[in-house]
Structures are given as structure tokens and as C-alpha cells.
Amino acid sequence: AQKVTQAQTEISVVEKEDVTLDCVYETRDTTYYLFWYKQPPSGELVFLIRRNSFDEQNEISGRYSWNFQKSTSSFNFTITASQVVDSAVYFCALRTLGKTSYDKVIFGPGTSLSVIP
Amino acid sequence: DSGVTQTPKHLITATGQRVTLRCSPRSGDLSVYWYQQSLDQGLQFLIQYYNGEERAKGNILERFSAQQFPDLHSELNLSSLELGDSALYFCASGGRGYGYTFGSGTRLTVV
Image 1 (cartoon, rainbow over the protein chains, first blue to last red):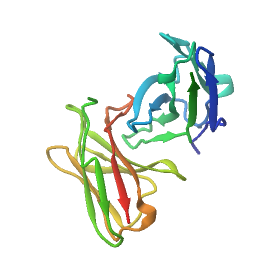
Image 2: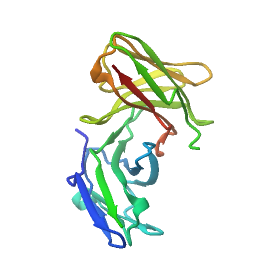
Image 3: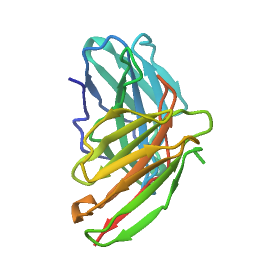
């Protein structure tokens, strides 16, 4: 079975603090993709990053960084020097690719991040 | 602008009614996915269409149906609406293996 767990329901940090959002996934497939999406208060879902299961290189994009560890089935997301605009709900998601095009993305429950000025 | 267009943005309707939500995928994307986001259920996958054919089904109620037309736009039909159907309905499009691109969603309120 496929599952995505985001154990942190809500996090509050003070502006300029670093914050890490945890994501743990379960799948028996060897080929899969992991994603992070941001949902600001306006409601839209914004794609942040995609990683495939064969690429464990960590990635940094500005203040954002991602740590992918297959050994622990985790794909954590760190925001450095957080800003008020980072306040949003963040979703981790898993997509497996079967032998056909029958696939779907499973989302975690989301972590609500509040950055306090 | 994500390239995925959803209409309408907001919809208020009464219980028992039927509504149709529309989605136009990003240019070049053959797949359309529908998701429901409610407060207590999170983001739930409903159904996927690929080039006009249904490809995967999730937690979609029998009162709900969808289709994808030859021009690749998709419609999600919700009938016999109940209060619990109030939610944000997202459409997404994407290529195989890539991240979805989501539309801005349709907020449905059933009163």
C-alpha cells in the first residue's frame, strides 16, 4: 500500500528561524516520484519540487532545501530564514509508476506552517 | 497562471442539486486528474482521465461522474448534492512521471 505521513500537523516559527517539515512515505514500488506542494491561504496548490527514486541528491533552491533518504523513506523539506510569506500548508506527495499509465498521486495530510513576524 | 483552467471559481448550490465543474488542462497534457479537498479528509484523489479514457479511480462517490472530451477538457459532475460535498475541487494535468500542475480550484458550497 502507498502512504504518505506528515506527522507535524501545525508548526509555528518566528520569522528568520529555520524550519524542517517532515515527510515519510511507504511504497513497495522501486520507481516512484516524490513531490512537495505549497498551498497558501489563497488556496491554490503550487508545485515546489519533484524527485525520482533513483536520485538521492539533496537539492537547494534559494531558501528551500530538500533531503531525500531512501534508507528511512523520508523526504524532508527545510526552509531557511523563514519569512511571513512562507506561511501556508505544505503537502508531501508520492507518485508511483506502474507498467501502464494507471497512476495517481497520493498526498500526505499536510503541515500548516505559520511564520510569526 | 499555471496553465490549468478551472471554472467556476466559486459555486453555491442547494442540497439535492447537480453541478458541473469544468477543467481545461495545460497545453500538451493528456492526463486530467480530479481531487477533492475537504477540511476533514485532506486531498483525496477522485479520478484520472488520459486522452479521453478513464484510467484510474479513487474515492469517487457513485453520485459523482466525470468525462474527458476530444479537446481534452474535462468535466466533473456532482449530483444529489449533500452538505458534506462542500469542498475545494481541484483539477490537475500532467505528463507521466512529472509533477502535476493544479488549477486554482472550484470552491463548492452546498447549503
